[in-house]
Image (cartoon, rainbow, N blue to C red; front, side, top):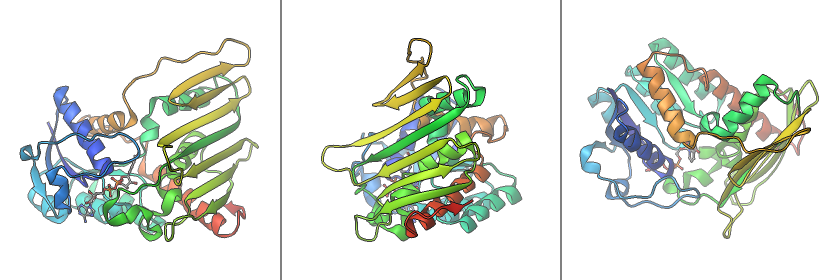
Length: 340
Ligand SMILES: NC(=O)c1ccc[n+]([C@@H]2O[C@H](COP(=O)([O-])OP(=O)(O)OC[C@H]3O[C@@H](n4cnc5c(N)ncnc54)[C@H](O)[C@@H]3O)[C@@H](O)[C@H]2O)c1
């Protein structure tokens, strides 16, 4: 039976809590024993809504040990792993502390704000011989997983080009507004667009160079709208865009369109459609569980069976941050190509 501690019970922390409740209901050998959050409102079930539905029920917190300080939680609890869903500026500090206390760590994306912090997290996992995974949920999202398998198997030949988008309403729910502070979150580029950066890194590897045009709209938040070109040796045309100032009733959207020599795959409005060049289009049968559930179950199974974290290894998450930082540098220089 794995004993887990959850740190951070904001918008995404509640999404993770829902997964633990479901896994326990399903009889999976896991038990969430402790939760930490610095904001006492969270344990009174007072939450602000986010831009996707990740769980908005009332929780029974009497079944958990509750903490307001994660140092105290790491000191007092004997946990197999800690699930860190803190604001990004705390990822490295909390991850290194938990690893040094001998616990495995699942930490939300983005890995950290800079490469030094990412390396400190990797070093801590290695010196303690513990597992570390960054919650790049799209690597576990059925539609993205399907795309990855088609790219890898070469089902429709080589990739000619691809477009990735995500965006939505401005995130106004965060603790003391950290998400809209560039120095704390890295803005839309590092917080939201990083999902597509990671997908591109996972599908195609490190690009030769990136060129990003970015625009700031909200004072102090960094780049709120970005558009990036990724240069690859074989000339495939890859672009990704993000915009978190799509307000009104926009909500949230993520989509992609990837063109291959012998067909294309389009994911929009939650439906993935495959269009072969010489056959009828079809909608593949995919798992219905979302990426958060599948990601957490994968990590728990990796600990239970002592198998490697090969779908989202931390070194690859660090490379994703390297690409994101190059994009920021490019945007700061009006789209100049930055070599990687
Ligand atoms: N994978 C995804 O799709 C996805 C989606 C949203 C957010 N995230 C990531 O999840 C993380 C959290 O984002 P969020 O939107 O939930 O933010 P949030 O502000 O809603 O939640 C953060 C929580 O951490 C708590 N907290 C802050 N400082 C603390 C401290 N020192 N000790 C203990 N608790 C503390 C806050 O009270 C809050 O409840 C971020 O890294 C974000 O990028 C991932």
